[in-house]
Image 1 (tube, helix red, strand yellow):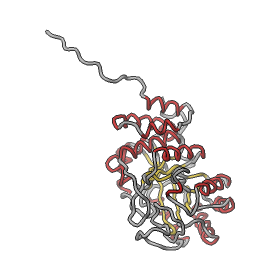
Image 2: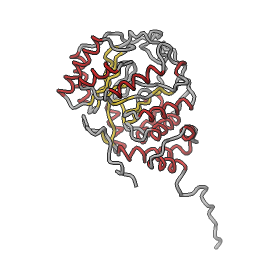
Image 3: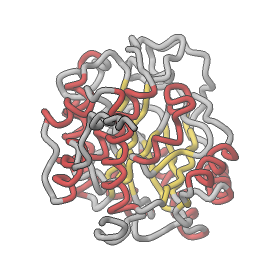
Image 4: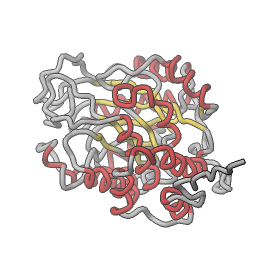
Length: 352
């Protein structure tokens, strides 16, 4: 009988370069710019191994838990800034609702909707450069009521803030302020001219000085280069942002942004890179996940541990039922409403 020799498999069974990179991150090493660029350029046939590496890091601090966030657009349009990506800016001609700040009762009603959807964080966003005294006082009153009546964590997105304004929000019960850097310092002038990257950094410094958590992320797909995406992720790591939302540009007719092509595979590489650059943060896959990840949406949660349930500022999200079904299919579980530990699990949990 003739013996047929089987060829040696064209791979080895040792740790891959992505597993080695994950181990470096788990050992406390900071992701480098070169590391980040290498992740974004990873061959598609290494995508699953890259996601497995990102999942090791995600699992260390978050297990299989997912933070659910509910967003209300409490003041829409009427903004004097010229951000290219935004349908609410003064240079946009997009057809969107435009209204002044909702009364406190409507904002409080939104908190009830957040609780009904099992959200752990209620996000209140208003348009405009910076809140005036009347809007800030109205938000503070609503925040105090929400914190009194619910166990929700409270995040507000209100534009540029001073230390005094941030402290007023902190005193009312706000836990976290969202203020996205959006892109790298190098690319920022391409998307906005009415305020600067330094203005945004100053707001984040005021938020931190007031004792509030930082929620800050960005938008991918505005014509930036890979180096801009990496620099944004690394900057957020330097700021130690507690929450990092990653948006993928939704090209809304009437806005000035020049979209760059995004594939589901590239979006997953972006999320893996952000996780490796920000291992402990609540990493949220935000606007654009339905449009750009499409059938690969469930894979995003092997890097990210946070999503919105419901709609975004000026774009619709998928039905919450689909989100809950996705979590159930993955075997992941939502963080309980108002979890006080920020969703983290002990450092060694689940890590061999």
